[in-house]
Length: 189
Image (cartoon, rainbow, N blue to C red):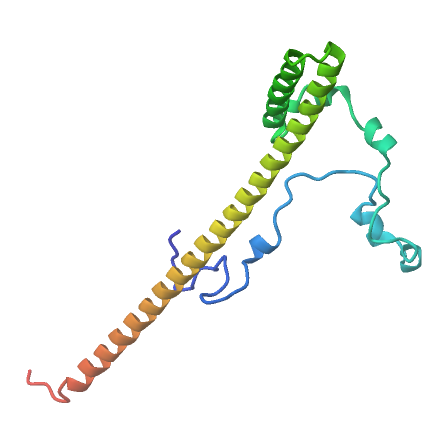
């Protein structure tokens, strides 16, 4: 990133020594937008203030029936793309197989062993899903912190470089002034 003029580059993070997070960490970028029953911004902007008085900031909560109706058959074809779904299902299948087989071999009848297997499948899947989501949240927070630290280091480095350039310019100016002061006021030839 070469610059032709002497202007300092725009720093991305806070100045050195600041305790506040950079702007890009405080306001994360939204990668996915869900279009639901919430009104669009353009609708809210064009509405009169009296029309907005009755509205609350929180949209109405969806019901269980609406949730079930929102499931499409194509959703089952892309389940492998959902983060943590594979790990959760694999753990659930393993837990269900082990518990179901264990109950069957300890003398339980097949329907009872199948019920235990299904319960272990659900419990194992949910526990693994939540554990994976927790790990992802920790990783996301660590990555945000790493970006913040890198931004601060870059800001400090640029500030040090700017200070070094300024002190070098001042030293050159002083050297030129000293050199001009030492010149004779007369010429021999």
